[in-house]
Length: 182
Image (cartoon, rainbow, N blue to C red; front, side):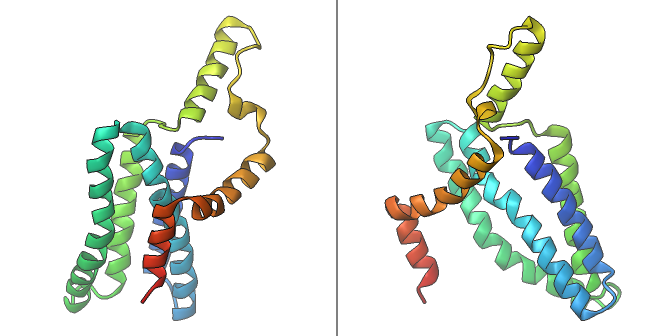
């Protein structure tokens, strides 16, 4: 209803704040809670990225974009222990610098997204265009479909969608089987 950009900006900002909080956590229980929240809010940009790539790409370019994006999911778990291990083993830094480095990367992403990323969600763009047309023409007939949907309807639809995809999409079914099998 509101677009992808507010989700990116808000959650990357919160992730940065919670990574900084992890870096200065006074004890282990606080670190566990703060790290959980940082991971939770960090999942939103990751789950929206596929939709953004779909919005900006053509049928041909999506093939390359999605494969590059998917490979990052495998590169991160390989590089993170190497970088984290170097930081922790280097006595002048300590384990807290793992969180500082993550916070710095998040802050950089926040700045880049805030300054350079446009809105890509089609329904949000139509809503903004309809609002602009209503304002410039003074005619209330310009409406986007998303403006007629209540927050409750949108939430119920969004919550049903993953289960519907799991029921009818073979790719999703096989991916879930792959992820859950040992």
